[in-house]
Image (tube, rainbow, N blue to C red; front, side):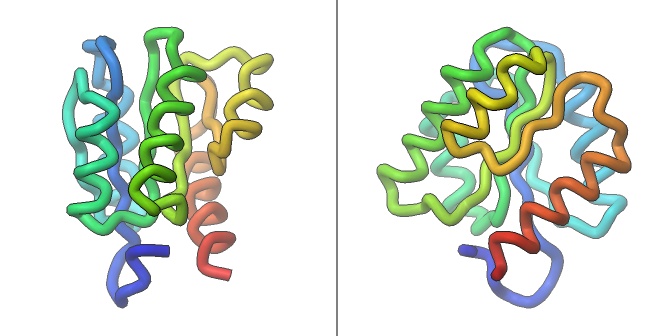
Length: 138
């Protein structure tokens, strides 16, 4: 894990692609912050390259992608490929948003550490991110 330093686990919450709705991402960011994570929120309409670059610069352990646009499979694949390209595959990627249950296995097969479809409670989200971090630290 790149952020093995002491202190709170750093999480980047990002909105890739053209999706302009960020209310959910802001709620997720605030919930993770309240749960003890250090959260960096990039804002809307982020390019994959910028998400990867910011993750490296901010030394995060986890990238949380918030995707409502329907492009979750392609965007997740591009972020994971981008991390591999810069030798940062140890940064876990989790995905949340408008994700059909049928696409959850596709996302995990691509390398997503966890998927949080619409309807996931905030408590489940925090628990899931903590599990991802704990698994990565082993």
